[in-house]
Image 1 (spheres, helix red, strand yellow):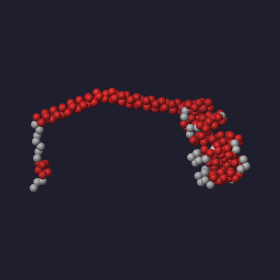
Image 2: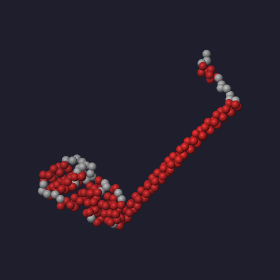
Image 3: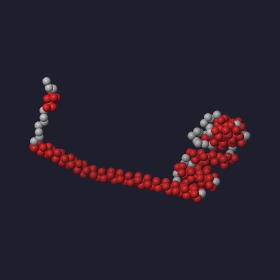
Image 4: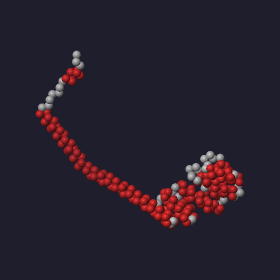
Length: 216
């Protein structure tokens, strides 16, 4: 006996008449008109908000493009000015570039200016207000070398205290300088404590460790 599904497969759907097609076309036309009318009402109701939103998006996109272009042009100008100052060995131009830029670029320009003219005010300013830790710590090493004779060992230790962490790239150099200053002041016991910290640190650079061992 044939199943219900098999019997239904054999049953053909009745063909549509012209009247059926005409009725379908009328339904579609009415549906489209209703939708068009709803769309027009929606647009009339929210037209101002839609225009305002479009303007806001356009203005924001334009501002972003202008900002990116201005930032890029400023970076290119800074790079060009830096190259010119280095070629001319112009410490004043580098110092001006440092004042008018930011981040590591400003720090590098100020450090280069100091190397050219040896103005200790520049390296001290970098040590106090540098934008990046690496340059601040490097500047402090230079200041300690310049001003170290005018400091006691305790004062030098305090000045270099910011370097006494492994997050500083000059951690071991700072420790060695403090140990050397205690030796210079005749405090061998305290100096040896600092030297032992370097010698017993497996991560200490070989050159720094060798110097510490020689002083110990």
